[in-house]
Structure formats: structure tokens, C-alpha cells
Amino acid sequence: MRVTKAAVIQAASDIADKDGLNNVSLKVVAERLNIRTPSLYNHIDSLEDLLREIAHSGMRAMNESMTQAAIGKTGDVAIKSVGIEYLNYMIKHSGVYETIQWATWHGNEETGEIFGNYLSLLTTLIHSCGFNPDSTNEILNIITGFLHGYTTLQLRYAFSEPDRVRNELNTALDTLLVGVHIKYD
Amino acid sequence: MRVTKAAVIQAASDIADKDGLNNVSLKVVAERLNIRTPSLYNHIDSLEDLLREIAHSGMRAMNESMTQAAIGKTGDVAIKSVGIEYLNYMIKHSGVYETIQWATWHGNEETGEIFGNYLSLLTTLIHSCGFNPDSTNEILNIITGFLHGYTTLQLRYAFSEPDRVRNELNTALDTLLVGVHIKYD
DNA sequence: TGACTTTACTAATTTCATTAGTTAAAATGA
DNA sequence: TCATTTTAACTAATGAAATTAGTAAAGTCA
Image (cartoon, rainbow over all chains, first blue to last red; front, side, top):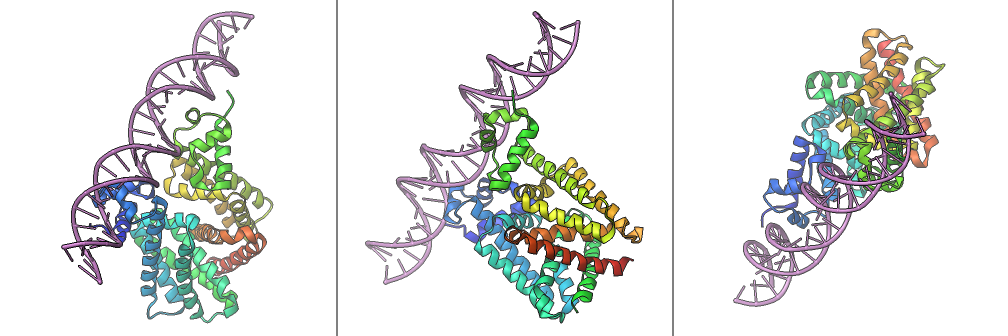
């Protein structure tokens, strides 16, 4: 009697980050934990369930980091801090992030809830900018969409030149926010 | 003697669009084509190879549609037309689009080339806006990043309310381009 | 201590992907 | 046209991995 559900998810996340999502198999996870493959079923329902759990754990960690990054800040500064933290997480946990993208297509209700927490954080920060509240959702979609797409497309460069990509993301967010301010101030 | 490589990719793409990426298996594709599973190896190298081919075929089709959408247009109007076409393709071929996202992580040189063609199209359109050529790449990253992220996050709504999402994408691109113009004109 | 629960194990089973080896149809080319 | 070569199909194995069934050990708690 040793392994816990959290340990399974942790082991699987580590493997995802080191070897990529399609090298996460029950066989490999079990080996990492020094148990037999069927024993994993005491902690998870299926491989697909495990992948979703990896994604959820990662999303919660991202939410936590981004929330920390926003503490004591408001407006554009806060939004940009959150954006940089989003990128930082992707760089540090690219395998988990790949799983999060997978969960975009194969998520369940819980996935939606956790994503909702992320949206809540951004919503609060958008409010702190003083935009017309009627436009909050429109702005939310613009910012979250941009952040997701920009970081994903730049991820390949972010490994070798993290500082450059971080700076360019910061500049790009400035540009985006200029447009948002003109349109919604 | 009947099936061709193109037919295999087409069948697999149809299955992806109808049942999602993780229901694309050699077994199912072979059944659709009325041949035995091993016969597929006359046309493809492996399941992973097939998935990449689905992605490549989809990316080429998107490039073609977007190029058509840009004909006879310049500047912001052209960029927005391309963006709408990008969204249209995703709505019509969500399974293939999921495969394209998969290929973001598991692509090869050819994947990069096809993506390069897309970047070339956008680069041309950005030039037609008259921005400082030194900033073309920065702008390219902003626009392609935004487009990818915004459409991906809105895809779930795009099935039920395509017109609303199309309109909002158009507005969002306007907002983004306002910022870009102020920053780079 | 004795019932109960948890978690691991071994032993199947199933489902696919993939490989090997064979055959017949189709294409090519003298 | 006819022989040669290529192509693409087939059947039969093989192998890897997920999942299920059934069992035993170890911890929990009354």
C-alpha cells in the first residue's frame, strides 16, 4: 500500500513534460511508480481519465500561479503579469500544456469549471481596467484568445530564447491593450 | 486495386470530422474503405503518419480557402477576410482542425513548410497595410497568434451560433488592428 | 481481535497496430 | 499483343498496451 491518486497524476505529468503526451501510457506510469499496470485502476478509471486529470491538475496549477502573479496589481499591468505567467507555465510544463490542449477537445464538466476559474480571474482584472461592464465578455474573449494563441505559436521558440519571447509577448499585449482601450474606454 | 493515398486521407478526415480524432484508427479507416487493415500500409507508413497527412491535407485546404478569400482585397479588409475563412474552416472541419493542432506538437519538416505558406500569405497582407517592414514579423505573430487562439476558444460556441461568433471575430480583429495601426503605422 | 476497506498482485482477455509472406490485378514497355 | 514489373490487395502472425476478473496482503477502526 503506497501510491496515491495524486502521485499517479504527478508521475504522469512528469512523463508528459519529459517525453510528451503520447508517451504517457499506463505501462510507463506504472513502471515509474514501481507498481504493476492494473494497480493503477485503484486510482484512475482509464487512460483517458488519467489524461484529463493531468490536464486538470495543470490547469489548477496555472490558475494558482497566475493568481499569485496578479496580486497587488491592477489594470494592464496585472493582465500582462498574468500573461507572462501563462507563458512561463507553458515553458516549464510543455507536456502538461499539451494535455491541457487535448482536454480542450476531450474535457468534461470539471474541465469547464476549472477553465471558468481562469476566466473569473481575467474578468476581475478586466473590471479593474475600468472598461464599460457591458463589454467585459467581449474583452475577455479577445484577451484569453490572444494569450492562448500567441503563446502556443511561440512555444517552439520559447524554449531556446525564453527572455526574447517573454519580452515580445509583453509588447504584443501592450499593442492589443492599446486597441482595447481605444475601443472600450 | 482501387484505393489511393488521397482516398485514405479523405476517409480518415471524414471520420475525424464526424467522430473526433481519437476515433481515427486504422481499423475504422480500413472498414470505411472496404479493405483490410494491413492494406493501408500500401499507402501510409503508420497511424501517426496518417494523422500527419490528415493535418497536412487540411492545412493545404485552409491555405487555399484563405488565399481565395484574400483575392482582390488589401489591408485590414483582407486580413479580416482571411480570419473569417480560418474560422469557417474550423467550423466545417473540426476534427481535421483538431488533427492540425495535434500536428503542432508532432509535425515534421513538411508541416513547417505548409505552415510557412500560411505565414507567407499573412505577411503579404501585412505588407499591404503599409506598416514599417521592420515590424512585419512582430505583427505577423500578433495576428496569427490571435487568430489561432480566438477561434480555438470560441469553437464550442461556433457550432451553435456561427453567425454571432463570425461577427464577434470580425469586431475583435478590428480592435486588434486598431492597436496594431497605432503602434506600427 | 475481527470485520472492512484499500491497494497491490497475477492471470486472462481484447483490441489494435504492425510485420511477413503471398497472390492477383493492373500498368508498362518491347 | 504479351511478358515483365509494379502495385495493392489478402491471410496469418506477432506484439504491445489497455482493461477486466479474481485474489491476497496490509492497514483501519469498532
